[in-house]
Length: 317
Image 1 (cartoon, rainbow, N blue to C red):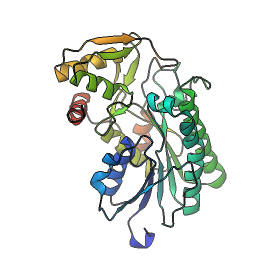
Image 2 (tube, rainbow, N blue to C red; image 1 turned 180 degrees about the horizontal axis):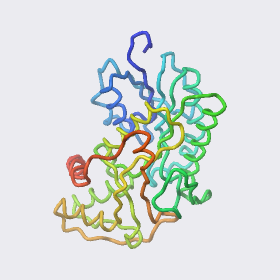
Image 3 (cartoon, rainbow, N blue to C red; image 1 turned 90 degrees about the vertical axis):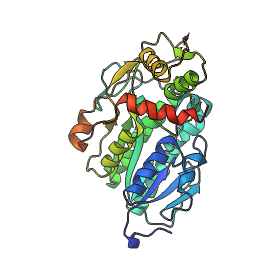
Image 4 (cartoon, rainbow, N blue to C red; image 1 turned 135 degrees about the vertical axis):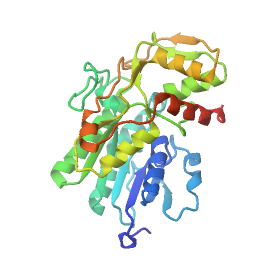
């Protein structure tokens, strides 16, 4: 059992075996935290936390946080990162996605309240839906189809934000909300449906790159170490309203595919498919708030980050 009497901070990371949760865990441990990871492996992987086996400052509990959470330990921070996060996952698991956004957020907020801990919610740029404002600022309320196929994820996160702010206002809980924009890096799943692993995997195996629509829709890609740095800074701040964390460098999906083909040296072609329902046409964070409140902005250049990611996937294809 971890106790505050031993000195170093104690953090709970839900979704701790996921892409972002495992990288956050590594950063917290490097900062001297003791970490309790929770995950039910719906989309997380033991491989992401295998390197932590035997670390006395880390403990893992297999649990669905949509169910009641009991921990005897003291807790200083709760980072709620549990949720399917790619379209292929939340379309396959729509009800668990809604439950972890609603019940899971309620349970983890309750844990933070009971322990007197700081709570940080991993929200998403999907709160903006298919935005009519570009780039997206935190003040924009979004353009979301609540009953469309993507609504299970978008509305789960929007509800989670509302619940988090309710706990802050009503219970005085120290809460933070990060709106995460497209992030990439090692430990992504090769076939999780997102464009970075999809394009890299297809290019490495010589398959055509699947481009939905005409490829003119835009995304802004942030390397994982930059994102985690922003999240860590936010957890230490006194700011309670949502903060965009992402890289404002915007490119079209077609441009992104062409960069991947060039860097890998692949002869694959682009294979155009119909655009999915409610797929956002633009996505670019306004990070003025992160710069002002956190002194944060991304540092890793796209070429450097994507080469590291490609190196990781070479062993996976």
